[in-house]
Length: 147
Image (cartoon, rainbow, N blue to C red; front, top):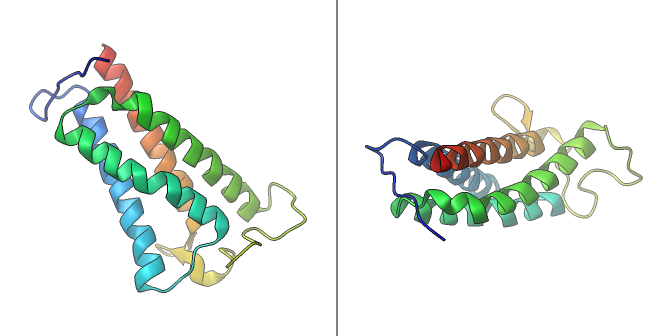
């Protein structure tokens, strides 16, 4: 595996990689703030999403530090699985997927008004947005690193 070096002055794939790290870091810090400071216990599906978001913050930080633009090879599958879980959670939350159980039924629920942020945006949708941004940025980094 070769590492493409493209620092901040070189442009290329480094900027989408850095932006993906910022998204992962903000999403991780936001989840920690909601859970630890606001005292809102995450539901089971939120825990699964955290299990894929938190490592991305670390993986992408290391990749930015060493300017490893080939990080997409191992970060994209992690982000993709997190995206699938967030999509499923969002579809359950929105009532698109008919389910016999409540969304987040096996633990605290994301469906009450306290589980919204930024003026009423539900947490599952924020998670889906963060994973979507990371996936798009990693694909962009991949395209720029191979160009």
